[in-house]
Length: 404
Length: 96
Image 1 (cartoon, rainbow over the protein chains, first blue to last red):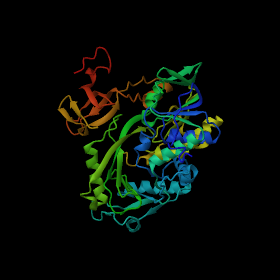
Image 2: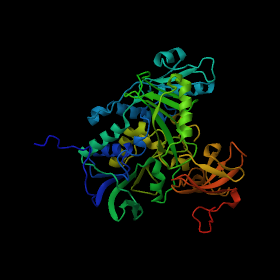
Image 3: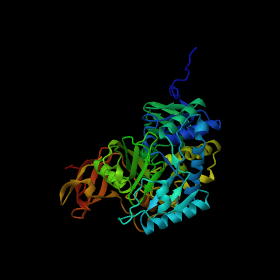
Image 4: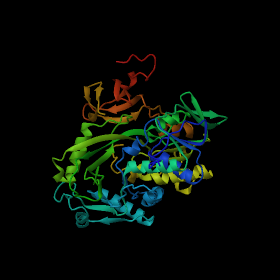
């Protein structure tokens, strides 16, 4: 008897000539869309990626989950994503190491505190458990922090969302991939889409080199590379691709069990279960498709981290990396149908906020594909909002991305 | 990845001396259609390769200039004052 009949996360298949749905991009959005599609009975689905599964921004983000956004469009969207994350380990029968340990957004100036108060008010109105706390409470939650009393940029207050947390990002990708595979979805890594087929005024498939694959629906879930895919259907998107850098230190004894973010210092910090300190910041100040990091940003992030946690001085950095962020002008995603391009769907504009939206992004896109109706939750995110002047202005999406 | 930019006034400097101004766009006429204005305001080529783009020498002479940079590798192909810049990939481009 074979003990392990299923020794990989997903099976390999030869490419077929036809699928109901082809999803370009095997990251969290592509795979969660495939998973929820299959759950609704649409199983003739291929998820195609030019690289390995989860090798783009899904494997390069800093794994923080939160819903403390600013707009009436953004808050419910990320709130529902957090709810899906809460049950996702059970749903996928896969331990995602989800840790709902809370998150603090620090304010060091009057104007920053004003912004945090505004977000707290909007959050509480829309069912997210944000609250404002003062320095005494901050010190209780994060004893290791330097409140910077008597220094430049003292910690004045914080927005605390106790239901925010951290989830193992690779596990989320693998969990959705395995779940989709078990329901019959095909995953094709190392398979590059070289063209999108348009016939009779609609998108009818994709080309993989010489091989043509037909599909009723083609969805792009390629984040930083979305402009390249859109070019294949002569579509120009309001996106600019910027790298975002992060680094991780050697493992230390546990000293902090919440994530801490400072918009004024352009830095966010948390400690992993292994004890490593993860530090991320804003996007690089210029657009690029290069996923290489810089010494300049490492020094800047390290210096700003020391403002909050001076005792980390002398700790060694293990790794530094960069991932691509497809920044939209209003810091909100671009999702759904594209006017004049029937058969083609977009899930992009994921900037610095895509990973936290992974579950709800896939859930809503799957509903759109399966039913043909755009769910209310993502109606405000359609591409046509730019022509209509109905931008979302989700500034709280990127408190650290000040330079973009 | 960091790189050097050749400021037409100051010469080679670290990219962090400069402020990025985005890809070079052509402003439509004042009476342009809503579609053209939307494309100008929001639409971006976001080239994965040579891109013609604005830079300001923020920590130097503070002049704006135009560079052609390969965004895939961050190789700067050429820099010059705005009116003299060649179009990326254009045959008449003489490089630098």
